Length: 263
Length: 293
Image (cartoon, rainbow over all chains, first blue to last red; front, side, top):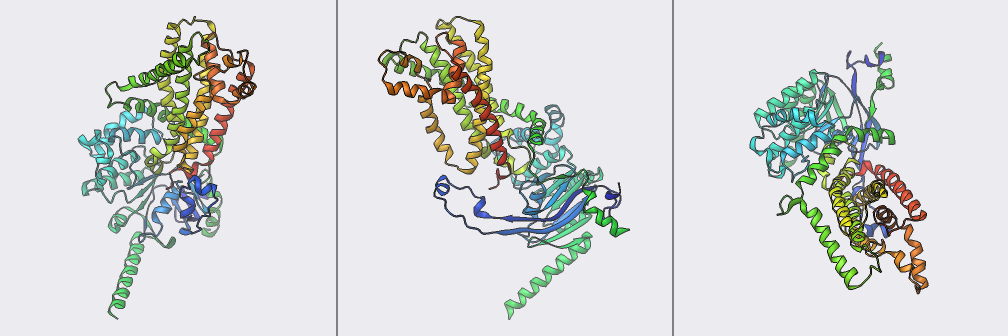
């Protein structure tokens, strides 16, 4: 198929295509209206936040894309849009299969034990009972939860939650995995194991999108980096070049600030 | 060479890719649901097991609590107020009615809560959200089966003769399950838009309970010679009440003294189909809004 033979993706088939994607938040329109407000026809404030604006990129099987940018640059929003969890204002996102999002804030069911959460999470990902039973020990071992497995998830540390979610989400070997800072809270040994798993997934023709503040993590695992600023794509290319430009930008910013303080 | 390929990338390269932001058509959505059948089979069973685990009698409360309720109604409305109006098997009449009504009410409330209690799951994993109200109703339905077994035993003990028409009880209860599923879809959607619904539902069901002929038989009142005209007028409205029609239909298969005229039958079947399909479509229309806050 000629169409898959694209510049930038080589011979590999495209697994994710983001075209001119924009996400707009309207905070008041999204919040729950009480019955009273609706009955009184209370006007809603029309404040718009352009979280992502006109971002485009294509990824192919085997790609590990890193997304960097300052806080509030739209990284997580873009990831949630790719996961299909929030609607686009304009543009389109096409994917080979439904992406799996792995986020650090996700807690599944805090009152239930880790064991129940693994079962519920696995079933919600479409696993059947037998497969889940077969892989259960693997999931628990990878998450390194030990005796905590039967305690409610709300008693877990953020690192333990992240490990459990990572373990559940990657056991199905999604073709398209989106990772949002989830590795940031793990300890060094978990980070090493999870990066290894991400690389092996990419080798199995999977595609990974990684959002992180840890530039070293991005440099060590990605083959392409996108730098987002104020929702727009600022730079896109080789990890070393983009990370260098990103660092220079902040250095210049810091210097300008220091000068302003002095003067 | 490169430019021509790059041009193609905006069109043909999308072959075989799916639009992640597109809302699913009804057949696609149903296929997604089918893929999660394991979830809908396993989660309700585990939920049921986990409930009441901390109480002394555990799951026995599922039977004891409605039975105590039936006992209270029997004493107050049957023995003291005499609302039974000569029904031979008032205890059986009460038991089936109370059990089925409670089931429907609990499904509506569980449906309303299903999205809010699973917010973490909704925010982390993409799956058809309808599995949540369906799982909630499935859990209640699994709990209903032993309760109905007890209700049947009570009607036998209170002198009801076993007949071939008892078999109709199963399809008649199935109609109620369909209707209730539709109601749970509706309450789930409404609860996402208006949180007030959780405060309104108990009042709504309390009112409906008294209007659905659970504690009395409206036919017994209209059959009396000196019935006032307004009672006759109100009685004509009863078949429009889905709970009245569906529960009366179920009772008619077990209890010899309860009749289900055609209007009851038509109402029960129409309500169950309309509520199920309408509720599902209403729920699906809100799919992208669930768990967004």
